[in-house]
Amino acid sequence: NAGVTQTPKFQVLKTGQSMTLQCAQDMNHNSMYWYRQDPGMGLRLIYYSASEGTTDKGEVPNGYNVSRLNKREFSLRLESAAPSQTSVYFCASPSDRASSYEQYFGPGTRLTVT
Amino acid sequence: DQQVKQNSPSLSVQEGRISILNCDYTNSMFDYFLWYKKYPAEGPTFLISISSIKDKNEDGRFTVFLNKSAKHLSLHIVPSQPGDSAVYFCAASAGSNYQLIWGAGTKLIIKP
Image 1 (cartoon, rainbow over the protein chains, first blue to last red):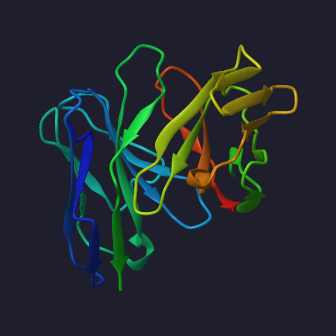
Image 2 (cartoon, one colour):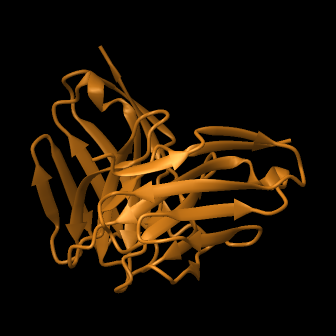
């Protein structure tokens, strides 16, 4: 039972390049989230998926797209990377238990855009 | 406009003593608060939470206190241990979608 897994762990891109960050969870949860974490700031929600087949924008969606491929997998795509997207990206899956706010996180992807 | 603020970027505490981490919030609609712990190169992990209907919640060495009138919560760790050295995030939620607003984190260093 791995929980939430993310690939890759590290990535360096040049401005304008594209890439897809992969996330998978084996907890059979309905929801999956993508966050970014920048120095001196809290985690900010990029996109979320409340259930298979649905996606919604979070606080900072510009420059990103997502795909909820199935219940397990939720990918984040940068079509044309910019230096402002240098960050650590976390995938999370909230618990399905009623009234539970707990979220389970992957280990993160450290992305540098030069 | 940060709705959840952790004003101390770092805190250093002697092993065995009490660690107190603070968090302030501005949105009076927040009704649930959580603390997460994060080690380097890992994702955050849930530590303890509190509902706005309570003013205290304990779990072993960890206690969270909520002062709604001051819009302030704190995490107490007693006694502090070397393994407690990590970044601690405060997070809050308002409404039924269970989405969280996060503070910037406080790095706790436990000195031997």
